[in-house]
Image (cartoon, rainbow, N blue to C red; front, side):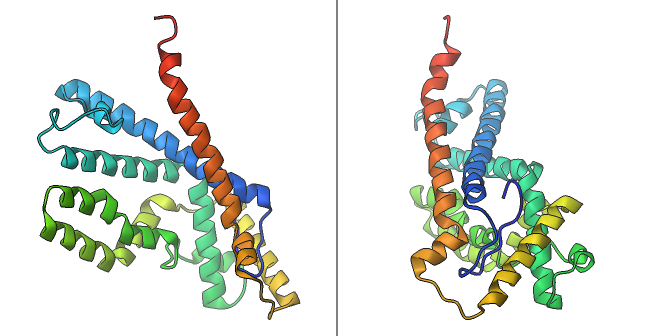
Length: 249
């Protein structure tokens, strides 16, 4: 989260609802920054190469501009993905993310919450959502453009290879981009979240909640609400920005 770490068992959680909302909002805001960075890169490259690369990013270019438009779009999508990773790495979220993984490793390995032990634990975790994304993202980023060109064997190879290498690729993405060594404050928030969760669990270890409540405790609806609000804001900015840029002309 932007201001800490949320840990949940589905029956108990450790974070306030407003912070979960801000988490979803922040992720989309970072995505907006990444797309802006990718646009600047494609606009600059387009000027030097005399190609409508920025127009392709905006969906304004057609097959008449590029003989192999799907491949160009694939390259731009990969650029956007790289920009997302870079922006994530530069943001405080990566520090909290690293703290989260270290503390979870500590609890799983040593059976207790300990600051010194947690600091020595790795930042990559196989059960992180990054691992799942590493196995699935090759589908829209690479396989689908290849399919549109009729390259079925190549697309199939991407699907299989992406899924089989999801763990080493996921670990690499986590270590290089989506996590970084946490500050003492960031690690302290993760330790506090773990202690809060364990304390609440010990009150009633056998507690079971309905599916809808478990999703709420995990923070899914709150983060989804933050995502929706942020996307609406980005859409509003996207619609009005051209008029603002043309003001006075």
